Amino acid sequence: MTETDAQRRQGRSSAWALIGTAVGAIANFALLLLVSARYGQTLFGIFAAVTALFQLSVVLFRLGAEVGATYSIGKLGAEQDSAHARAVIVAAVAPVLAVSTLIAAVAFAAAGPIAEFLTEPADTATYERMLRTIAIALPIAAVGEVLLGATRGFSTMRPTVLASNFGRQTGQLFTVAIAATFSERADLLAAAWALPYLCTVAYPAWWLRRVLRDLGPTTRRPPWRTFWRYTTPQAANAAVQGGLEKVDVIMLGRLGGADQTAVYSLANRFVHVVVLSRYALNASHSAEFAAGFDMGDTERVGRSASRVATWTALLCAPALFLLTIFPKTILGVVGESYEAGSASLQILAVTVLISLLLGPVEALLLMSGSSGRVLMHNAAALLLNLGLNAWLIPAHGPTGAAIAWGVSVMMSRTLSFFQLRRRESVSSTGTNLFSAMIAVTTTFGLGGLGARLVLGDDPLGLAVGATIGLISGSFVMARHSKVFRIDELIDGLRPRSGGNR
Image (cartoon, rainbow, N blue to C red; front, side, top):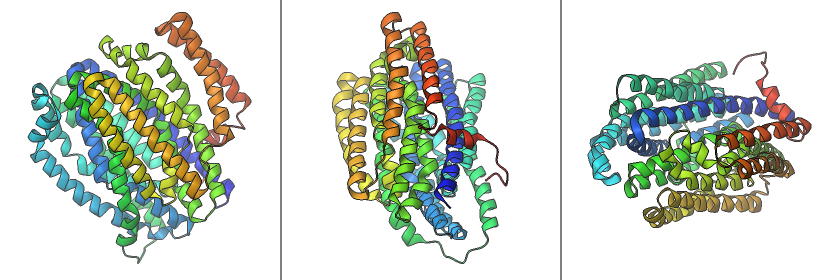
C-alpha cells in the first residue's frame, strides 16, 4: 500500500471514528442528564462510582489484549500475511474470557465487603446491589473490547463505531430511559446500563468471521508466546492507565461521599465526552502506526501523527475553551448543586488543552513496541495520583481530585513525549498542530473570553462566545483547509464502491 492509499484509508477510518464520536458524545450527555434528573444527586454519585469501578475492571481484565490484537494483526497486514489473524484472535480472546469470568464471579460473591470498603455506610446497600448486578457483564465487556481491537488491526473503525458508539452507547441511553420510566430501583438502572455491552461482542464477532472466511484458512497455531510477550506489559499498562482515569472517582466515593462524587463525575464526564474524538483518532490510526514502525519508516509515522494531532486539536480545543470559560453555566444545565464542580471542570479542561500540544504520544509509543516505557511512565503517574488524591480530597473534595489528575496526567504525557523523540526519533506534533491551536485560541479562546468579560458566566455569554468562535473558526478552517488536511476527513465521509469493510 502506498502512502497516498494509506492516507485515504486513514481518512476514511478517521471519518468513521468521528461520526461514532459525535453519536457517542450526544448519547453520553443525554444519559448524564437522564440519570441525574431521574434518580437524584446521591444515586447519581453511587452510579458514577460503581460504573467507574466496572470500567476500570474492564480495562484491567481485558489484559491489554485489545492493543496486542491491533498491533499483531496490523503487522500481519504490513507483511501481507493477514490470513493468520485467526490464530492471533484465539490467543487474545481465550485468556481474557477465562480471567474476566473468574473476576466477575469473585465480584458477585464479594459485593458486600467491596461496597463497605468503598462507600459511606449510608450508601453501602445501594452500592452492593448495583455492583452485584453489573458484575455479570464483565466478561462480555472485556471480550468485546478485545474483538473490537482485532477489527481495528484491519485498519477500519467501522465495527467499533457501529458496535460501541451506535450499539452500546445509544443502546445504554435507550435501555436506561426504559428502566427510568418504570422504576427507580438502583439494580434495574445498573442492569439497563450493562445490557447493551452485548453489542460489543455480537457485531465484531460476526464481522471478523466474515473477514476471516474471505481470507481463507490458516494452519498456524495460536502464537501464545509471541503475542503475550508483547501484550503482557499491556496488561500492566492498562491497569495503571485505567487507574489514572478512574481512581479519582472511586476514591471520592470513599473519602468524599456520593454527593461530591456526583459533582466531580459530572465535570469529569463533560471533559471525557469532549476528548472522545482523541481516543477515536488514535485508535483509527494505531494499525498504520504499527505498520510504519515495522517498516522502519519513522518519517511516515511522524506525518501521520502530525495529522492526528492537528485534527484532534481542531475537534477538541473549541469545546475545551468553552468549558474553561463558562463552567458554571455548563454544569448548571444539570442542576444548581453541580455548579460546585466549576473549579474541577476548569482544571480538567485546561489540563487536556495543554496535553493536546504533545500529540498522540502514548499511541505512538505503544505501536512502536515500547509498551514497557509507557508502563513505567503511567505507573509513576498513578503512584503520584494516589498520593495526591489521598492528600487533597479530604480538604478540597472534587477540586483536589482534579488537581491530582491534572498533575499526574501531564507528568506521564511529558515523559512519553521526550522518550518518543529521544528513542524513536519521531515527532508527534508538527507546525500544523501549533497553527491549529493558535487558530482555535484566537477564535474560541479569545472570543469566549471577551463574551465572558462583557456578559458574564451565564447562558447568553456562552451563546455569544460559542457563536463568535463558530463564525470566525469556520472562516479560518475554510481558508486553511489544505493546511489542516480537512479534505481527507471529508473524503472519508463519501460513499465508496467495492465493499463496505
